[in-house]
Amino acid sequence: MRTAVRRRSLTVPLADKQTAASGVDALPPLREVIAAYGLSARRSLGQNFLLDLNITRRIARAAGPLENATVLEIGPGPGGLTRALLEEGANTVIAVERDDRCLAALEQVAAVVDGRLHIVAGDALSVDVNALAEQYGMLRVVANLPYNISTPLLIGWLKKLSLFDRFVLMFQSEVADRLTSLPGPKTYGRLSVAAQWQCEVKPLFTLPPRAFTPAPKVSSTVVELKPRAHPLAEAEPDLLEEVVAAAFGQRRKMLRAALKGTFTDPQAVLTESGIAPEARAETVSIEGFCALARELARERARMRG
Ligand code: SAM
Image (tube, rainbow, N blue to C red; front, side, top):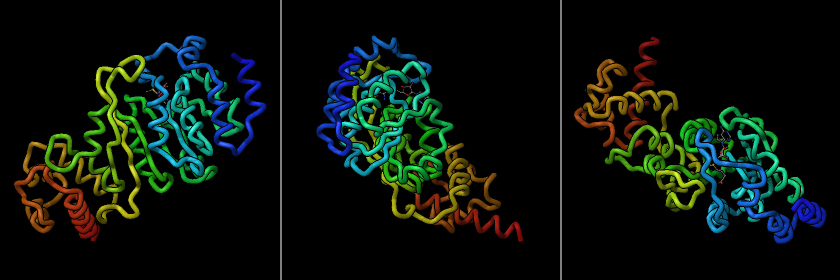
């Protein structure tokens, strides 16, 4: 196994996608890697591995073309998706993994791709994406995310959106539904507004539990988020977040009641923004929330004198 890796790593020329792919091809199958390194899945780390090459390839292709991309992969685990990204020609993959048990398996991949894979051992929630973007340029995040931190990770990235050119991410389908929801259903909420205000958000495909090892309880969906050239409507991010949090914090209440703690006269503000004071949060468009955030900016400015 190790001999094959070494031999291939010496023969892979740098910029040749086909030959570089054959270096990855020569690696042992993922199931063998998992057995060899004792990578029994840990629920606490959200470990549901993808071992089917057709699926990892499909995700990598959905994120392409990758030749000029710097991919940030969160949670490479045993390296299935990592391999697919490299085989699809990713210029650079920065793979952030918290589980030290996976590092040797990942080093094995790094050994055959001529410096295109950078392994970062640590917690993705504390990775300095500013520093990465400074060093590598725009980042494209492609990942089968650990489900327990998928939302905080995405919220953090949305706050630094200028560093990213695209996201292709696997979420639990229930989270994907919230990300992509239009106003109306119960799925529409803070996450829908936060994501769609700044990104075009599209579900790409859904996978059943059996696609993963071990199988989770629920299905998962790959979602693409493409940063918009401009947000859907003008608003200060903090004020938009404040208004949306207040509105959805009491989502069963009419907005004139839910926004009592936010505006001095919510009824007047809602009317001024073209929103019925009796409406509930889940019926308000993102543009409507932006109008409320602009009203809040005006009210705060008046209060400051
Ligand atoms: N990419 C692999 C695949 O598709 O087979 C594994 C995906 S698995 C759903 C999530 C991965 O994220 C695991 O490898 C897990 O160890 C890793 N992980 C969990 N929490 C993490 C964190 N805070 N920072 C970085 N990686 C983390």
